[in-house]
Each structure stands twice: as C-alpha cells, then as structure tokens.
Length: 193
Image 1 (cartoon, rainbow, N blue to C red):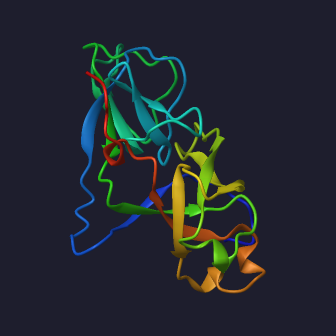
Image 2 (cartoon, one colour; image 1 turned 180 degrees about the vertical axis):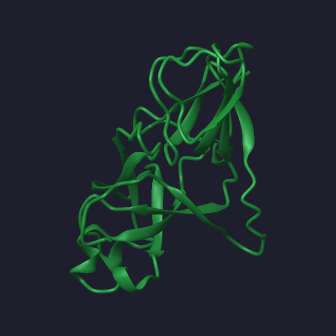
C-alpha cells in the first residue's frame, strides 16, 4: 500500500493515554446548500457555526469528518452518506456532519512522499488539501511532507503505522503514519472579551 501514493484522508486509530477508543462522534451543522463537498477523512473546522474543510495551514481544526445526514428533498427520506455532496439541500433545512472531535484521538494518514524516523515526534506537518472522490466518498487529504516545521502546523507524526506493507524503505516511499492533530481548536485558548 505505501509504496503507492493513494491519499485517503485521516482515519481514527486510537485514543492517546489510558482512555478507551469509543469511536464516538459529535454532530455539527453544515450550512444547507453549502458550496463545496466534504469527504470522509477530511480535517474540518467551523466557520460561522457550521462545518467546512480546513482551507489553510493556519486553520484550527475541530476534528475529522466521518459522514453526514440530510433529508432528500425529492423523496423526503433521510440520507446518511460518507461525504457531503456540494450544494446539497435538506428537505427539513438541516444538514449534519458527524465529526470525530476528541483531541486525544490519533489518526492514520499517508504521507505524500517519503518521511524519516527522525521526523517522528520531532516536527509538525501540514496536510495536503486534496479533493476526495464523489464515487467512494473518501478524502484526498494526506500528510504534506514539504510543510515540515518546528513551528505550529496541523499534525504531528507519532510513529510509522505498524503493518507488514509499511516496513521497508521501498514500502515507505509514501509511508502510512500515525498522527495527532496539533492545531485542534481545544488546544488553543481564546483571549477575546
């Protein structure tokens, strides 16, 4: 798998520390008829109280998009989907995103090029803002190795994913790594009024 570049977003791995990984998600609103799709595995933020994919390396994430629910305007049937199709309207006016928003969650993600063992727990990285697939609903996000920095960035790799197809140098041309979200909104304190 990791000798081929196939970015597919962030996938929950575990909870850091002693907590159990309940794989629980929270529900957040998506603006009805919002322009732009959101895919399973996209890192998301809130904008004016609604969910949107991050658009810049300085955005503060609330977590990772895990799917959505809306009511089909034609059939009036509830739809649960891996991705939010751009400009989708809900018959009841409510579109909801399910977001893994626990700041202690770690995720598996593929790097967009090779990454070294020396990068683990030493540097922060941005994420590629790739477009997902409307066929599979899967994200096109990945770990952007060119964004390596000692300053703040979206994610920090913890370790290489322990898998037989992710062990050799050849396998790690596009390594799968376990990361934590560094720029999580819960890690920053607002200093406003």
